Length: 401
Ligand code: SF4
Image (cartoon, rainbow, N blue to C red; front, side, top):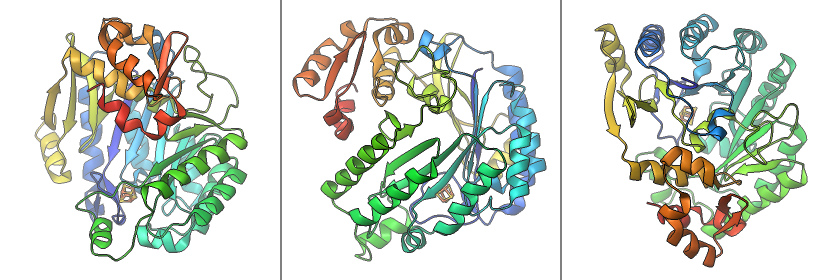
């Protein structure tokens, strides 16, 4: 298998907006979880045979391992080493993009960062979210803006030459001026890759309860759209290539994604695999995988709870929560929904190889209609969102469901 996602579901504290499968105050389970996770990785290495890449575009991606969460940097270096060793039986580390998410509040120690780098992690993805301390407090983050700055500098100093920073906009109380000050600072950091997400207020989160109770208000849709436009302008001026709705990267070093036009060299290969609707394995509580075995494509996810996950692996069972078979119609829709997120859009050759049918035969009427509405456009051998379509992505995606 060429791509692997590993989920670490521990956090020091739950952020007020988070609805991921992650748990606070369960640090005493970390060691047992690592044992179970390594066992699941071993089981996957033995039992799942890799399917060939679905298209030339997918084949051009380098292999990837992505350790996400939660907060992977709550693992000790010894635990991280065991996880990577088990993962390497599925995706050899040599030549792979090996990413780990990191919370700036947990990676301030230089020796930890250096150790991660020495273990083979070659891409760090730091959740900074904001450089405005009052906002960070509202979000319930465990770090200040200054700690995020220091963590980033430490990561650079120990040799991480491929770093992503995550930010959120459309936050409670956030003004355009405040957001533009954040953007102005980020571009001076010369980070390799930036992911920007508009806040999604999820029910069941403390932030949702606060906002619906009238304690804090969010910028309206127009103000949030203005923040997104300001970000696109600022990163373009600073030389970044926006290659996906939420993602910007620098063009630096060797271009690896050779069969994908206009994808910058610092683009995240692991996320490109998702956007090309490629197969990937996943391990860990609540982790989602997408594989084709015996010619049958399916998604699966592992049991959500940490104790249930540990217990299943302890009993020698694969900790599957559900297997969701995917029909040909599902695969076609997914290929469009994921691929149109990329600024290069969906290649006709890629679609045909992934779906076994010609793009125009399957979606000709929808494409013609959306072109008429100015939401998508044709490029040689491809269809892609227009800048207006990027602002109204959900409206476009619905047409392919
Ligand atoms: S650190 Fe990330 S995963 Fe953990 S609670 Fe906060 S947003 Fe969620």
